[in-house]
Length: 385
Image (cartoon, rainbow, N blue to C red; front, side, top):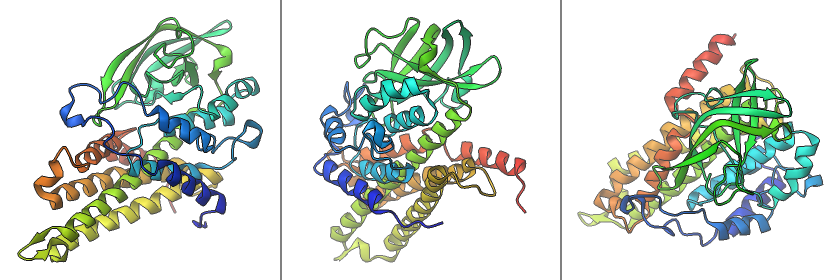
């Protein structure tokens, strides 16, 4: 394998840095000072700038107005977005759109891809299951009834659902297969009034963002809005998890830089605390965490992008990446809080926001323990050597 990025991938990251320049991580009220959500909606102005820079259509083919890039390019852009805590559904929208292009019918692609690549409609994914700890595809049942599918079940913690026109919902059929249904939630961002039998109950994330519990009661979805191809949900989930690892890496890198800058100017006993061995060793340990997070991230993204075979399915590399991302980003922000002292908890300083986002990312789509179990199952099913 060759982890050297292509010119096109680097150009995407550079474009993202340009669009994200000036985005303030504290542009909304602090989650520590807010009883509800920090904002009713995501950062629409930033979303429009991302669309104008063609960063929402990175994975789309040229026939749909996209750049035809891959998961690696998306992860490079997500990495940059996390450094400024960008409040946009970039991961969910891009992953859903890429899945529609890869597995959806020609009619669905033609109807949705180009428009979504320009940022309208907004897409999101229900990937947390009923409780956040169970497989998402088992939380909703789907049965065919003529020209429609009937869905029943609950998906919790759906991100950006109040701004989304369509939610990609994994569901299990009577034949024990997974399908993906594009459901109109009926929120502010939905096209029309939403699907009958669909309700959304507000939830608030650790980071203070507005989530929703999606309840489906005999909700009918037209067959043309259901992706029934084998492997679609598995591929979408792997891309979502890998993208979450990219967010963890970008956030962790920014937090370690903040810590270095603070330790370099904070003096104790007449010397910057960065010169103290105990401080330097802790910072070095967190740097090692970040490099391990980076290596495992690019391994997982490369497997998804290339489709290359390996000793384990690509899901194994994705699990390893999420284990490192979950544990690593937690250690990075905890060390940052420790080295900042009381200043790290100051609600007028951005570090506490990064800590809240890190906890959300750590547990999103399963914490380290969940993926360790998944990796164990894969190793049992595919003995090495």
